[in-house]
Length: 95
Image 1 (tube, one colour):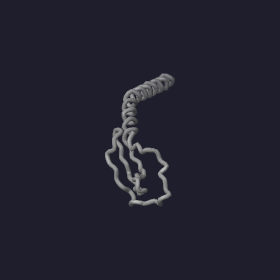
Image 2 (tube, rainbow, N blue to C red; image 1 turned 45 degrees about the vertical axis):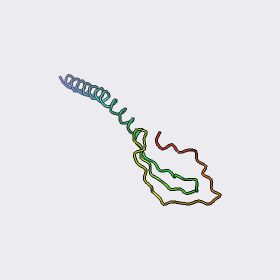
Image 3 (cartoon, rainbow, N blue to C red; image 1 turned 90 degrees about the vertical axis):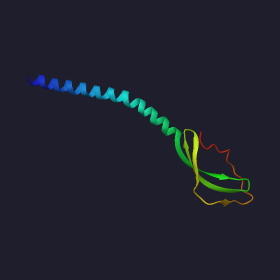
Image 4 (cartoon, one colour; image 1 turned 30 degrees about the vertical axis):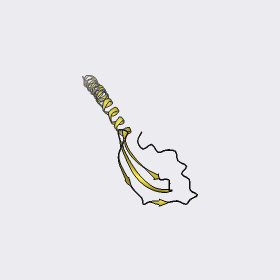
């Protein structure tokens, strides 16, 4: 009789584990993919924007869905010497 209760408890635990495991997989998979897509489309970063007079300012760029939603200065305008050359390629703010 003792083995019967042990086997019953193990069986109940196994069924509960498998039900929990598979129900979480079905529900969380779609949600995780949706959240991952939102994370990759919504982000922010900083960069310097410079003009042809060698004046630059650092800005904080916020992107949502591949589009710029805000751009705020985070520094004052800085002017570089005449010998300074901006080595960067064209800036693509939100891809």
